Image 1: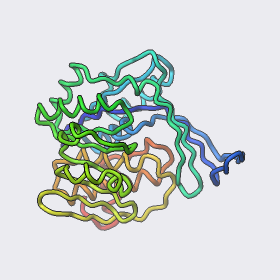
Image 2: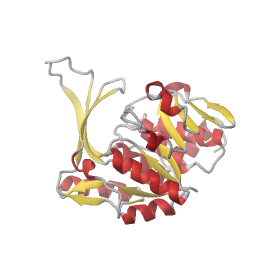
Image 3: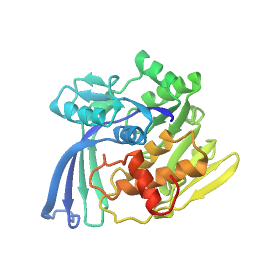
Image 4: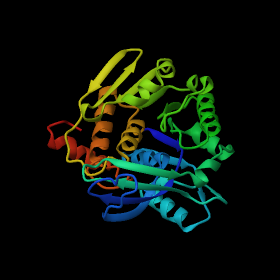
Length: 287
């Protein structure tokens, strides 16, 4: 199994479920509210660990109770959080609203995530890993520093460029693969076409991997959607964890992880390897 380091964001999520989203100036009655670990980086680390990868998370939290909540949740998922920094700013926070169809609206306050830095301990962890997985909810210099450390050590560099923003040439040149949805692929077309491997998530249609040896398409899975929050992160984490597998197989397991995540509430709902095995077996697919 691949060893993975994730450098990224971690938040305390407040998830409110309602029948429909309010219009501007309108108040609607919610169905439920819950609190838990979120943040794209932490979600992806949790997914990689639950898929079976030895996983290290590098990020930053505050000196507050929220930090204990999110770090305890990651540690319970077998993510190594010993390299997470404690800083003066508060732990990142996300206000997530989910409607009856499973769609979501999210407002994020970055907090401590803006203080993520790549120190010597982080560089050693990146050098020791097979795969580095990155996103864009932390400062771009930390993303570039992480990618540079990985390239120097021969560690594979995967980037999920979300939230979407322009990618500097220096970063693009350090990437082995990008994980994008249709919108991100279109918005970053010039940069994406320069990356050796492109993995495009296609929603219910599955995913496509394009690389030097051609293109591989894997169909999606029909599920009863409860909450799409974190489904893309579950896909990315599972993909990183299974980077050592043949392309079609790694895509299939990542698709299954994303689909299963959408059947539960909250961003931190990534399935275990055994749950993915059962999901595939129920559909007549050999794990």
